[in-house]
Image (cartoon, rainbow, N blue to C red; front, side, top):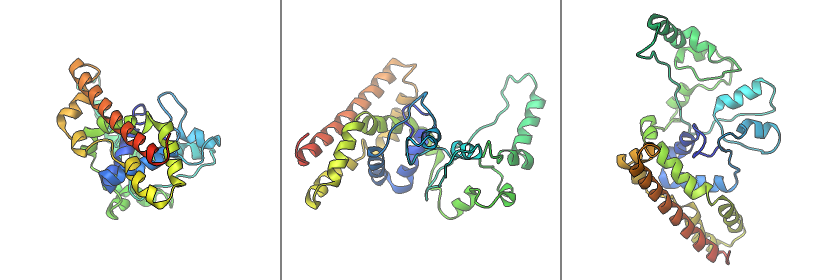
Length: 261
């Protein structure tokens, strides 16, 4: 799976279950998934490449990456989860455009029925923003409007945009940084008895921080401006250190309950 600290689309991927299933349940799910995962970072291969080459059996990715690979012969299959999210693409005319009329004409075409239909080409495979386009697409082409009508998109993009950076950072400190040890603890837990499971599972599945922290505008601002503001960098680093220390303490307690390191 993509490392949300390094891969641009991955913070949304992480936040979808947190919103859809609730903060605590979502983090418990991610902890179990992370324990079975290998992370792909910046500059690494696509998840679809890892699966197509047989190095992994299951991967988490954006749909069009996999759809494009399939269209070009990769032996893959993509399955949408019961709960999803839409990470919208954008098109705009810049204020300093040297050809504003041409730019506006292009935007109008992209958003038109014909323009949106081009986006469904197998090598592109995006999800059109016009509901009418889906009526003429092949059977099985994912229709987010139909899925949303069935309650399949319990995701607030506005909320997600604000907390994307701190959510990714918390994921990195709690699940990516200590990944080897976390995976070993989950493996030992699966072999434990029921009494031990009841004590250890809450330690391994706990959220790395409170939801109110990542929804705090001041915290969000610190993470979004940390590269340009030394004070913001100091605050973001301190928060990461606290999340890392809390995760380490839980893992050490879990290891002791499971019979030592």
